[in-house]
Image (cartoon, rainbow, N blue to C red; front, side, top):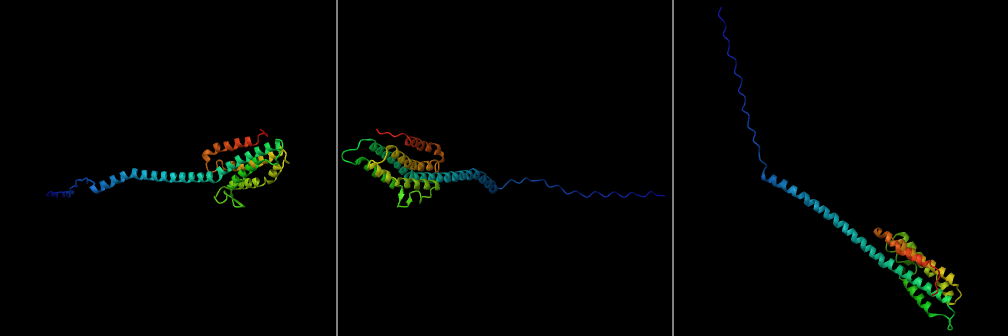
Length: 220
């Protein structure tokens, strides 16, 4: 019996040739765009910092301008009023402690009264308002200034009694102390309000002045 012939095995199908991977180089435009982006990062950061610095500087300038306005409108006139009130107090006490002159009233206290009234007048706006009311000041400042001006307006009685030599030196001294304390309270309300960095130092002068204001009567 004849042996069957083996059929030749089918050849495996040819595998497609693998394409060699070609690494494409980035385009010049893309390289430039990335380089520009990297360079812009520090530029943008610097611009942002400069903007913040400009805003901070503008705020500091506005704050300094406001402080200067407060100094010119309130703090300086209030300090001048304190000085004149203390000078009038000394003149009144000296007049009451000295022997009565032959000519009657002394002219020196009257001149000082006019100086005090002129200093207090710089804190007024008309008959009912003060310089602290239209400037958007803190309520404490406006209240203290209103009280100080009202206290100074109440000196008419002690002035008349002093000029007529009917007041006692101690009583006149105490009355002037209360009025001067009211003026010092204005300076105290301003201390540290718009200048927190100078708050402690700004309270030193009013405290020293208040201590001197409450000193015993001196007739010399």
